[in-house]
Length: 324
Image (cartoon, rainbow, N blue to C red; front, side, top):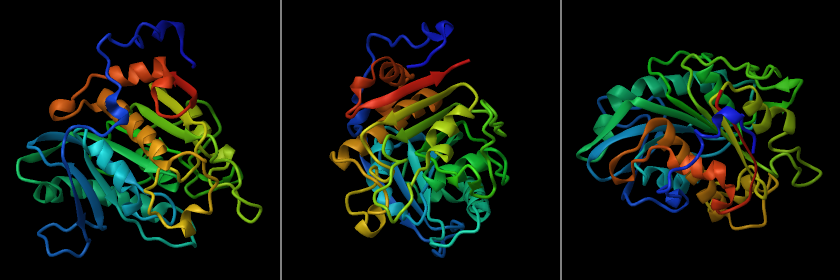
């Protein structure tokens, strides 16, 4: 674990720190599918999958951008887990195609969904549930991680500001010399300059850089994946790697094998990986944004995980962070 000596006191967890984030929270969750052409006063610019607490209250919002050629429904269990701790999760469905000339269209679409939130999201939530858009996080998996970072870097303009950023095994192309346009990796430390500076959590996989077989390249090549994303972040930033799992192992069990067979995966239970990723997200978002309802927290869970990574359901290695 990497830390500056001056930050050690900050990372001492309180005695009452809870690490129940790796199990579902206490809040009941409702999942809502909204099509872009729904007969609504303010339909979303893209179809969206929403996971929201059912209990009345005001909750922070996090937008999750899916990976290449994936569907938002493959992330339902992950979305439910995070929502059960007092977050409204919004996952837009981008166009899926095996042919891609760049990420500009998805970055612009993500900005449009962000701009839609103040007008369109409130009417879709359960009675008594309100969205606190002053606490808005942006997350992305795989290519969606590239989309999220590119949006945060200002490659499209969104009116709302992001207060936290999460990359889940983010991928920026097939190699250092073949980045997905727009090329955002500079290979210079701490070079990311976000339009709204915010804490960043980068969650990596230990097997994402490996090949599933000789026919397909790695799904998360080393020079364009989680380690480089973390290296280019400015503090405060965190990097936790699920050593024994692969690039798609956080998806729901019913994600089609036609998709999941393309990436090297771990031998362990995929539910363990989902709980690990969701728990890290909850701990980070509670620290960065606060929470809603009974599950509100002040960052003790994140501090505890950084101090003792063995609290997670699977091995986290490396675990590193920079606070200043």
